[in-house]
Image (cartoon, rainbow, N blue to C red; front, side, top):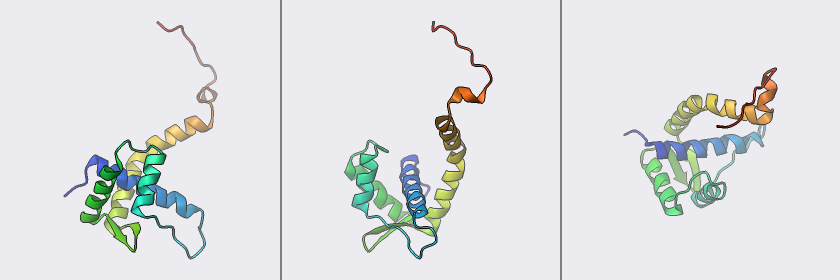
Length: 121
């Protein structure tokens, strides 16, 4: 059973959070973890999704039933299947994210010699 677009989004968000959080402890024998409630709070506070907390919780439960994530000892983790799906989603999305980040890090008009402006109609 394939994951829906919303479930893929939740999985991608969780995977990207793990990726970014683990960058801070590279080279140490440590790994970050997060509970369901803290992850749901993160998604709500960062406004990644406008869903209610209960809907996010249900999506995490469905991902757990599909064996894409595991929840043991009050810690969310991606399973091997979950990491594989995350890598697929990331490779599909990363070119778009790269374009946005490059345009934001430097003024878009700096990439061209001349920029033409016209009056709005």
